[in-house]
Image (cartoon, rainbow, N blue to C red; front, side, top):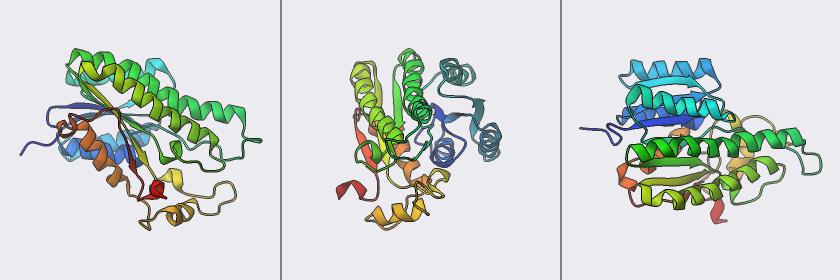
Length: 253
């Protein structure tokens, strides 16, 4: 039985851990050829090797998403190796500084915006022309519920993720007649390294997030990857410009 992404070629940024790794594994299992892009070379190469060992198609490429030439190279690598580009999962991101607005360091704010928002702009910029050549495609952007609701001490992250949602809608409108769908996912608390450890006086961020989740636990990265798979597949062929919360009910409160 053919996989849900059989014959498709995908680029995933932030693929060396967390949601990106879970998605890369799932995409490969479902038949996609995957280019994993990240600044964490050792971890990224290990994930690519693991996928190949399991019989999938994967290559790792070093990519700092704040640098246009490196994002372009990741896209070009997919086209060179596999002949086209069908899917881009814009997923690279950092949590950034946690501080109140009055003390939030400007350089940290700039860094979060550069990675978590500009990096997505660059992904769109370089992926769209290649998708037009191949007759269409699907782009999925990782936003966050913190782009929808507020959380103290997270100004940079929240601002960037709100921008990702707006950028998704603009791109969806621009690309709709070209066969390119653009959607965003908005995770709540996810069990990844980004949510571990103390934050701004909160001794255990994960435990604090669990208390905010009506479902009573954090998501596993694989649960987020399942939604990304759906949006990447032809099953979502009439869906564009949407923002999907994956938050255990957090934003219903």
